[in-house]
Structures are given as C-alpha cells and as structure tokens.
Length: 294
Image 1 (cartoon, one colour):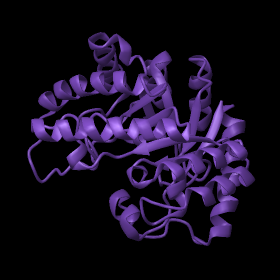
Image 2: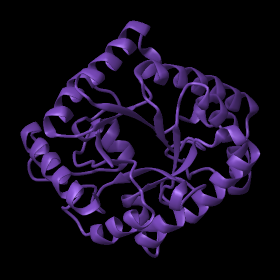
Image 3: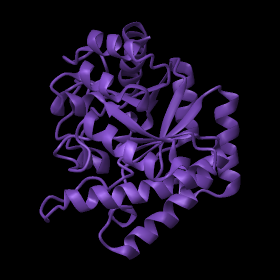
Image 4: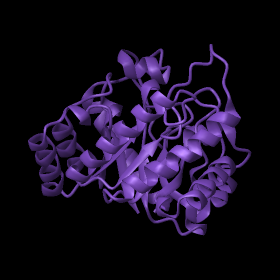
C-alpha cells in the first residue's frame, strides 16, 4: 500500500509550488503527492518534464485530483459543454502522461461543487455521465492512465454518486459500455462515507475489487487520528478486500482563500496552522495510518 497526501493541506488556493511539496512529502516519509489538475494545462512541456524528473529523483509518485469546473462537466445537458469537457480531459490526460501520473480521482463524472440553487437531474446526469466516462476511460487508457477514480461524494457536494453501492453500479455500467474503460474505478473517501454510509466497513467491502483509489480524513477534516472515524474497522475492511493500492489523506484545516470557501472551512480547525505544526501533524498521521491500515 502506498500512502500520500494532498498538497492543498498546506494551501489556501487550488495551486501551489509542486516542486516544493515533492521535497516536503519526501522528507515527511510519504510515497505519494497528490496534486490538482487545474493548473496543469498552463504548464509548458519543459515544466511538465521537470516535474516528472523531480518526483522521480525524490522517489515520489504523483497522482492527480480534480473537482471539475462547470465548463468541464462531462455529463452536462449541453452538448457544447460535453464537447469542451472531452477536449479538456484529452489534453489533461496527455499532460498527465508527461509527468508520469497514472491515476486521477474526483467527481470526473460531473462537476464540483454542485449549485443546488438550480434544479438537478440525477437520472439524466447519471446516464450522460456513464456515456462520458466510457469515452474518457478509453482516451485515458491510451495515455497510460491506469486508474480513474470516481469519487463518491456526500449529498451536500454532489447528487450523482453518494454511496459505494451507487459507485459500483455506475462503474459497472461504464465498463459494460466500453470494455477499454476498465481503468474507471470506484473511489471512496472516509469523510464522505461518514456522512452517507450506514457502515464504512460494509461500504468498502461493497466496492471490493472495483476500489481503485482511497481518500482518508477525519469527520472534522483533520488528519487521520484526530477525530472519530473508525480506523480499525476501515483497516479490517481494506484487508478483507485485499486492497494494496493508493491511500491519500485529504485534510483541510485552514480557513481562507478559494480552498476554504469551496470546502466550507469557516474557522481554523487546529489551534496552530503554522507550517511546522501542519508538518508535525502530517508526519504523525502517516505513522498512525500505516499502523491502522497497512
């Protein structure tokens, strides 16, 4: 099992100096740095190569996370938006190949966060999402992308996939529609499961071998071990399904900026948000997670 952390733990915006965080997570003992997809289209080929080389030098695996902007909604009812999304992802997957990233996760089947001030069409979004992800899975496979993790989000952030059972049904439909989209997988997150699932352990077992990526974090958005998520139960369930893939923690503890606004963090959740304190918590959480999950 490889353990990682999302760079935005230390940031207020959905951007950052990824070279700086490669060095940081390497020093902290992580295997993976998860970065945001949004800035990658602005990188030159030289910058993409430098990022790949730096990660390789530090023995850090890069994975990518993305909360799709409205204009990149592959399930939009507007054909022009779906076309734009297809073009965006085609370019993104090519850029991921250039940095050596073989995994992307998030609400790629939709957009994030959903604007609930407008009516939602779950049935239509579900059906269009399956068609869109079948196309994206095939394109991604041609770029060497092994996992597209479709994250099951809580009801306040998205309406399409809220539970592991829904994720499994959706992924199976995508794979049946396009056999070359076998990289399309279920992605679970302990924060969201804590809201939506009757049993987190049962949800993990429901995902089974379709689970392609796993996010961790506490119910209060702190690092693992500083809340009340049932980590022993989670570890047992992951061992039951023989999960040995990627585990990336995604804590958000600072108010302010676009990150705080989107995640709805309205106060500093920890008493000390200095970089040194955040580093200490991240290192301790990694030790805790390796012990509890493997």
